[in-house]
Length: 398
Image 1 (cartoon, helix red, strand yellow):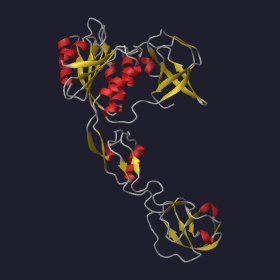
Image 2 (image 1 turned 90 degrees about the horizontal axis):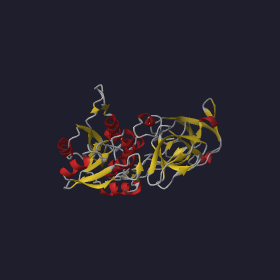
Image 3 (image 1 turned 90 degrees about the vertical axis):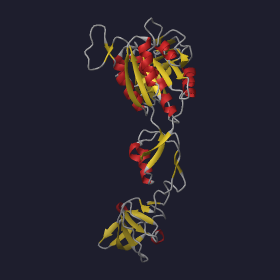
Image 4 (image 1 turned 135 degrees about the vertical axis):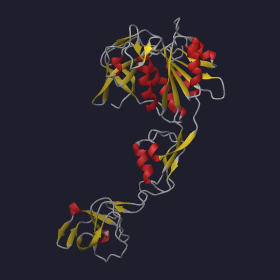
């Protein structure tokens, strides 16, 4: 079996990269930028006041002055301003060319049409042209996943469309005679295909679009037909049927449609039967085989498929944040496999404290609801005492 690190490296080195497309700025949130954004504008594009107050000549301060007028945002004042005269000015309003400082209104004393101002240096409370972003400055690098803040900056720069990686289209195939759809009441021995709904959300969160191809029954030929139909997508995910049981047919079905496994089984718990292969043709469609248990499905997705989908889009950051945590209680395991335990991580001062969920079985759906991290216990570890430090994959901000 491969280690988690080696399995991750294998997947990320072999998945194909997707082509780029141009999308309107309004549709760019969450997409991966394909080419660097270089500013064609300066921000701000003119000197302006950072505060409500009075614009003055710093060389004339302190003193008492007449107020020559009012300058509001969006209303430049271009007429000459007499010496020893100040202007009432508001936040964002253009600075007159012959005034160089702003005294905030709280420091000014207004008496009739005269205002008394203290001393202030040149540039006080003035936002200079280009001090935020200069013309020709690289603003956002390729491989960045665009957030609301990026879109705001792009809009300010007058960018109406961006070149991004095409969103990967991901086919989902569940396997198992026991599975039914969510709107079907399960009969004796049947289970709702809950993993499919979690995977749809996980794929979309990773920037892809998920397409449920169907539930394959425990038959090699029927499963092979579904996989063959799904190979026109950018990636395929199967759930269940990847282990070594008599009714686990995924590997045989993959081989029959020309998918060659690059790895099978990883030294981890849960998720050991994870597999990854590529269609042996010019498309090189990646196929990910996930275990059937829902917790195993989520853990393997987070460790391998989420980074793979982001890598296919050219993202520079493909893993969730990691942080050291302290285990609130001890844990015992056999050596040989890394364990990823579900935990709720909370902040205590400068430390992150991990509270492992009491139910760590790979079929325990409830453990996914109240936890925000996967704590990695090294493969060679056997007994971890309370207070032991471990690395955690943070599924949510803490």
